[in-house]
Amino acid sequence: MTRPRTLARLLARQWMAYTLALCALFLGATVLLLYILEDSFLDRRLRSVASTVAARPTERRLPPAFAAWPIEQAPGDLRARFEGRGDGALAEFRRSNGRYVHAMRIRGADGRAYVVAFDATDELTVNPGLGRGIGYATALTGLLLLCAALLARAFMQRIERAARDVVADALRSPDPEALRRLAASQRIREFGTLIAMQADAWQAQRTAVESEREMLAYLGHELRTPLQSARTSLALLRERSDDAAALGRLERAVSRLARASAAVLWLAARDTPDGAERTRLAPCVAALLQELGPLAEARGQRLRARVPPSLAVSAPAEAVEAILANLLANAIRHGAAGPITVAANDRELRVRNRSGGHGAGGFGMGLRLVERIATRLRWSVDVRHAADRTLATVRWCPTSSADAEVHD
Image (tube, rainbow, N blue to C red; front, side, top):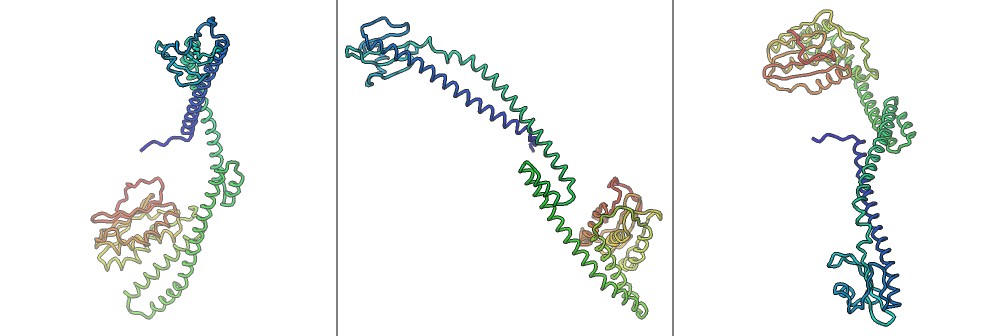
């Protein structure tokens, strides 16, 4: 996996590559222009001397490095260059002896064709100066690359500070509308677009959460009416019925519905628990063991608890009862015959039972409800299945270790 690069380094490399390409293009254009200028100067001198030769063909006093011949008497390489070409034609090439010449065909005043040659070997200045010029160009290019890197880093530092300020302002925004106002005030369009997208996402999340809260509140309130009716019916049955088992099953069902209703209503509340409300675990566990004891005995199970009497947790009673009741009910329903142990300390609570051969089954919506409640309380829930036992752990201390010992 490649290591991600910082934006400052990436931008610096891009600017340096652009500077290098620009310098190469500039140097190439400069060298080409120098060659063109040098050739134009040499051709201008050649034309000047050629005009003198054309006016006085028999005059042999020519400037140094110049020579003129009737075309039929010119050296073979010069004569070959102008075969089939008209008067005024120019040629520049390196002769077989290594000398570089500019040559021109002219028509003399006597009507004959002449070739005027200018040996420009000693007049060339661009080629000898390229070596020295490349050194200067390399030094200048290195300086420009350094400037590009420094400018890119300075530019990115400004962008980074601006981005950090934008993020800080966004984090301080209390609602999506404040984010939209912040987006509208941005001088950098991309920052404004990003903040506006974050505002839209935040608004969509708030809408979804509000919709879920309303649904949970509606569900909780709808459960209360049949629960009240069931409790009234239970009171009447308790006076008239002789079937204690059926009455116990009905009482457990009503208690389960009551706990589910209380948990749903608590989840639908807007405010996050602040930890001010505390619940003692021992009485809560004892009430649940008494309620679920007959069901466990019918399945050959024994409920045991080791909870310090003074142990209390920072959570509402309805939330704690909903979590413990669900874990115990699942341990009874999906566990094998044998002991079911509830043990707690100041960091966590564990429910341990023998596995009933159902694997990880049985923890569906109930466990999801437990996890939702635990998340709201900033607790954690962990259920582990082994070959012969199941262990459910509820941790309310953020610094607790997963391997903290709870004695059965």
